[in-house]
View (tube, rainbow, N blue to C red):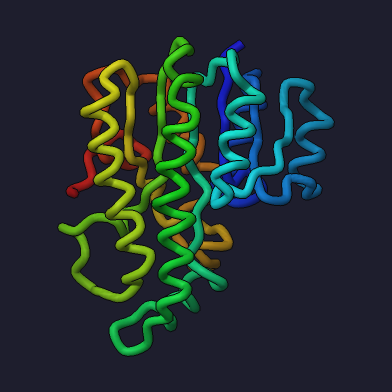
Length: 234
């Protein structure tokens, strides 16, 4: 049975990844600060191979503890998904990360969750991924992390956190040549982060992502991809 570990699995894209992987018969390690939410507990009730794990990714000791508890367990696909736009989703989040009105504390918190914690999770679970058949590490990025495509400005805190995630993805791919490491741009999805005006249904995004994951090989490591497998400009 292939296995996946998903951070930020209590809502949005992380929750949808957990649902669809479980539906495919995968072993799912669903991680979140507060995993005892109805959607996740119901998923675990329906699927014996789904386990829930309380994990605050900003607590590096807790990350190491979980990695130790799962020592010897292979993780075919690590979905490094936990992320934040601060206390609000789009479009409200634009108000506190603009040139004229930057909340620096929120920016620090965003970097902690979206960048530093993603690095910590990846390094803590590298051996688990390396022990699997698929050996795929997915860092959940965003189209807003593209320097080339930034033609509108704003969202400086979120953009910089995802651009940073892209650069560590590239570095991990260079150093961990036994793994497949990618940055994933899921599309503008209707989640708490993306807001109600977003264009993409999370169900459709995750279905396309997982279909793509099944096709990736060593030559894809280090790429920044959208859900259809097309390259996103750095």
